[in-house]
Length: 302
Image (tube, rainbow, N blue to C red; front, top):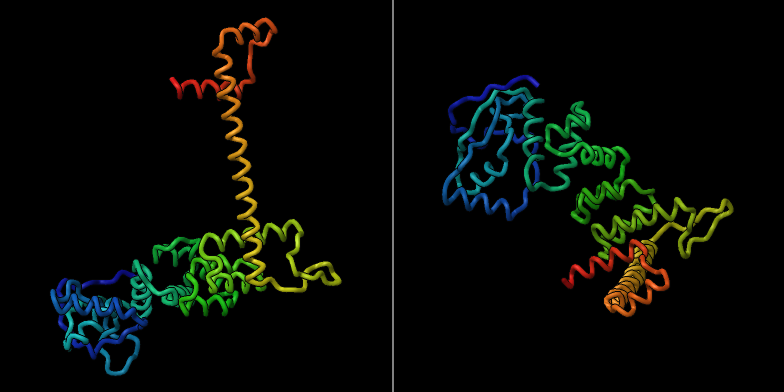
């Protein structure tokens, strides 16, 4: 990208003469917060524009950043707004606007999807997009994969706010039938976040081991002909939770018994008569793990 020049002076320009290149819907609460702040303390930071090269009728400038400020200023009854005018081509202005929007701490998932898609169409690869937006390459790669594979159902879930984009990227890695079940489990609030991702890994693990699921009827080729459902996903997750709960109980039981044995031996070895009896029988040592436990126990009581 060529170097742009920035004026050192803030200029008042007519809001109606500004063309918004990358227009996006705005959260109403955020909009009212901006408008309220401007009405109380004024505009803290001017918008950034460049001479209009997009061909928009009756427009003198293309907006690079500051859509929210323009809308809030207009809502306060203002017709002109302070602006920094820089020299940028139409492509540069669009890219700068996209990057500025994507770099925000809070942005809509669809803004992110659309921004990455536009940057890709401008010829930028995943690593370049990641560098420009501050996103990780893995994250950008996942977004591009989501769009390139045409995951309309997952994209619609993201657009409607039913699923975060980070989770949609992970779900898109699964086969189509599994995606539907995972999405249903998430949207019906049966499994969320890390629990859903754990269920996804469990399903993949079962399939690698050649295991089928309850209710799946083998076809003539030996594979299941019934697609997974959210209920199947939930069963797999619940089975794993139950298995870990049983393992935890067993581990606690073994630990309690080991503590009892260790304490009993420690007290017996503290008895001089018992120690003399062991020496007489030639039993002068203990297994190293047990001896270490007893030493640790003794230090706690010291």
